[in-house]
Length: 333
Image 1: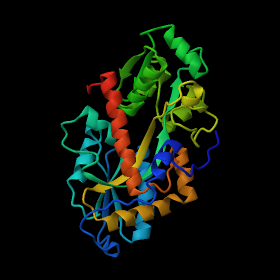
Image 2: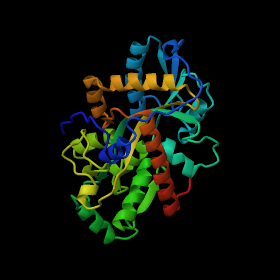
Image 3: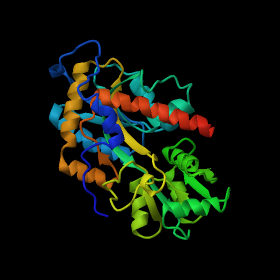
Image 4: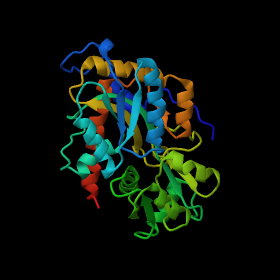
């Protein structure tokens, strides 16, 4: 499947952000942007080395270091469903020398773990959304279905018997499955695993029937015929697999789930620093080689997402996941 770079965020976000295009976040303690950075900048990522988010972070920080004249040091702090790395940045000095490159769990966790003490909105200064990654609805090839409507009919004929795997309770993969259940009106059973690798292994072995993994994990198995892809989960088709329809265009209009990656700083970081970072990140995202590399990860580059636009996106995502988690009665393991 031949990919091309996506130059705009999905239209749902583009429409919501259009009215905010000239808006800027007003933050206290103005500091001259030219005085920053005065020493190496630490970028904490709450995910392990080698993960898609880690690759995205490192390829981006290489360009930021070259543009700003200071090293950008990537610090992987996985654990507690992103909570460890996230809290470290929330408690850091708001001077632009500690940043967070985070992903979807940032807005999912508040509904699952309300007692963590870190607020995804209040405790951070958003800088920009950098990439989105739709998930892929894949099935074991032994299932006698080739389209989303056929899959829905197959599950409805076997209520409570079809198993779907995920990377764990509350993961994006789990929530995609729950949204599919609710919108398609089907009864299938969630099987949580301790990580996506174990889940995919069982899907390949036929122990579960379907999953919603990210493109980097799903598409190599699809190309070898070990899995069958039915659709992607975003509002529009992804550059990583342009021939695949979306779930929305396959009979469930409004189905729209992305994994995303974005940069934040601690709350109260001066606006001059936030805006300088935004400018340099947007400039880095224009590089064709970066877009092509991210397409290989199943990620579409997002351009021109201002701090204010990213803030509105984060607020909307927190609300969306809280509603789904509440309605589905999801509780952490």
